[in-house]
Amino acid sequence: ARARLEELRKEREQLSSGGAQAREAVSALEAQAAELERQAAESAGKPSAADLSKQAAEKRQARKSLEETAVSLLKQVEKAKESLAAFPAPWEEPPVLESLRQQAEALRAKNLESAKALAREGAELKAERERLSQLAELQEKLGDLEAVYSRVAKLSRLLSGNNPRKLPVLQYVLSVTLDQVLVSANHFFSVLSRGRYALRLMEGPKGGNAYAGLDLEVLDGASMLPRSIETLSGGEQFLASLSLAFGLSDVIQSHAGAVELESIFIDEGFGSLDAETLDTAMKALSMLRSSGRLIGIISHVSELQTRIPSRIQITRDSGGFSHAQVRL
Image (cartoon, rainbow, N blue to C red):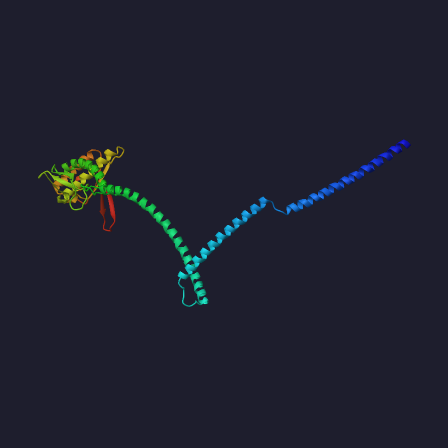
């Protein structure tokens, strides 16, 4: 234990000696650091040669820029002085500011109204342009329609009879059928007129602005010349009408096989016939009756009562009442 205690005392002395040396080294280092800081501070306050050269160049450039700016400002001042000297005085006497303010307010109000009017005119102009665009489209469509109308109108004029023959299309179609009717009617008319007359369509219009197509004329076998149907007597015109009725019934039956005209009724007309023509007409009716048709005659001619035994006779009594009697 005493030996160990002695060793510990020696180590304490060595450590105490080392701590003093360490403290001295630290003090020395702190003194060197303070000196270095002082030198650094002194050197920091003094610029280097490169920094001084750079600062001088910047100052020369700034001075040059200021000189150029000063020269430009002097030129502007001189130019302004010249303009001021050349500009005439706007008035001989200074204006009244209040009056100018009122005029300015009036002009502002007028400007506002003008702006509103301009806006309205702009809207109207836009609307007009839209209408103009629509009108252009309609004009283009109208041009196409006019081209179509021109063709259709020309065709319509031709079909309505405005053609060299003055023959409307309806009359033309009917005239084709009428030709067939006349072929059959002339068989009867030849018998009824004892071979003298025949009906035919007129060639061309009657005259003036009349249309052609369905006008009839009579071919007279005595003179071999055509004549107007109006030149026939009343009895002859009745026979012509009767022949046309017979011809029309034949054509209808030939065109429609399922249609049969079994009955023909003749209302009046026999009173205008003389005895010989009446006899011929009755023979023609008998011929038609023998072909299987029922012929009905409505007439006041008393002579027909002896020729037609089967009849319905209508009489009137003194009281004004009518009575029907069947005669067989």
